Amino acid sequence: MTATPTTASPPSTPLTTEMERTVRYVYGSKKYLPLFLKRSQLRHYPQQLFPTETTCQLCPENPNLEEAVRVTSKAKIVGMEGVTQNISTYRRRCTKCQMMYRYQEWTDGLHNYNDRVILTLQLCQYLRHNLQNHVSVSRVINSLETLLKMKFPANELIFHGYCQFEALCNTEYKYSCVN
Image 1 (cartoon, helix red, strand yellow):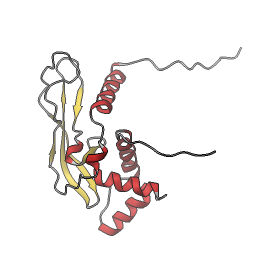
Image 2 (cartoon, one colour):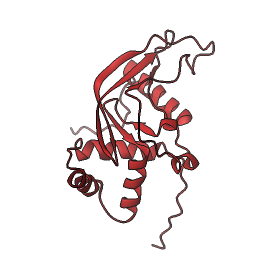
Image 3 (cartoon, helix red, strand yellow):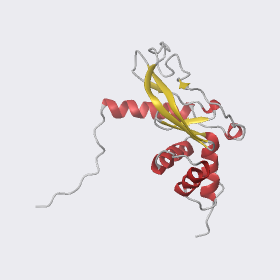
C-alpha cells in the first residue's frame, strides 16, 4: 500500500493569521510611490523609528494602539553613505484585534526590513539599477564596503530587504520576451 502525497495547505494558526493581516495592511497601505522615490535623498535619519499609526486602521472603531514598545536599540540603517548604528525601532499593537504596527515610512526615505536592518530608499534604487545592469547585490555591497572601508550587514540580509522593498513598490514592468 502506497501513500499518496496531499497538497493540503497547513493549518491556520493565530500567528499566521496575524502575519497575513500585517502583510495585507503593509502591502495595501505602505506601498512606495515612484514619484517620491526620485526625491528621497535624506542624509540625516531619526535615531528612533516609531510607527506613525496611533489608532488601529483595521478595526471599525479605530481604537487607540498600545504605547510604543522598543524592539531593539541596535538596529542599523544601511545606505550609500555607509551604516548608521544603534538605531532604536519601536512597534505598537492594537488593543482590540492585536494587529502589530511597525515603523514603515517611505516618507523618511527608509525601508524597514526586519526592525534590525533598515535600508535607505536611495540604496534600494541603486541596487535596482545595478541588477538591471547584471551586477549582483553582493557585488554592490562588497564594492561599497571597500569604498567606505566599513562592514555592512550580511549580503543575504540586504538582498532579502531589497526583495521586500521591490514587493512594496508600485512599479510597472515593460519587459517582454519573444520566446
